[in-house]
Amino acid sequence: MSFLQSIFLGIIQGLTEFIPVSSSGHLVLAQYFFGIHGGEDITFEVFMHMGTLLAVFIFFFRQIREMLVSLFCWKPNLDAEKHRNNRSMILYLAVATLATGIIYMIFKDFFESAYQNPMLVSIMLVITGALIFSSDFIKNTPVPASNIGFLKSILIGIAQAFAIIPGISRSGSTITASLACKMKRKDAAHYSFLLSIPAILAANIKELPNLMALDSSILHVYLAGFFASFISGFLVIALLIRLIQDGSLKYFAFYVWIVAGISIVSILRF
Image (cartoon, rainbow, N blue to C red; front, side, top):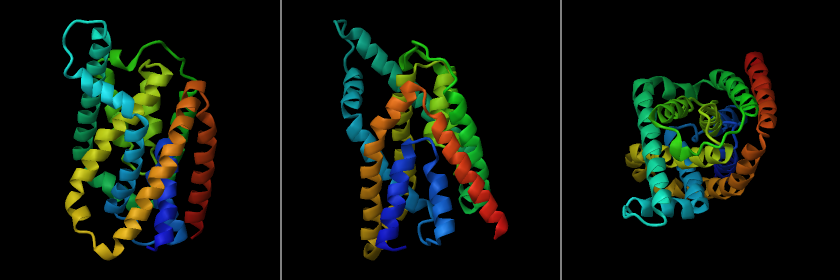
């Protein structure tokens, strides 16, 4: 994989990680159709996710800081309710992450083998389109993320777990699941972004031995993709939050259906 190919894949990762069109699915198909070799391993994709993780940290730095501060603020005062809500948010994020981890451990082999199957990825994109298309028709509610409860947190975590399959959008599945659980739209967007942090961190920790063992001669290639995914990812976060609030995700459904259709036809022809 060349330096420019790494940047190309990094841009795809950053743009598609948060927009509900499946970043992993796009990476698999881009590598398949453009003949890019060397980026198909899980380690490279985790490296790309590190860039988008940094984008989330920077964009939501203030909210993350306030949530962490709330862990140490238990005294009754004017901000007591805000701190309780922040602690509840952390708890529900942890529950959802645990559910994701359990599902991943059960279906680990299937998830990882899917990265070698472009046809499966294309079919999963069709499902992603159906998910995000339906999300626009779910009514907005006033229920904040801090009030969703344990059961709904588990359901959202399960939705995130199955998004490990390339072609299933992580943001699309978690946002749709959050809206279906009656979470208000703005909070559904924030919850999805924050939920990505422990998921990506866990993947990075799992792949840490491989990351540390990377040949220094190709490190610049991986770093190029990292920075490309960070920059492109940061630029689309605010856009997606606005689209979720406006109920305008269905346009991405048409896009993924077109991509899936072209991919399926092309794969069958060859």
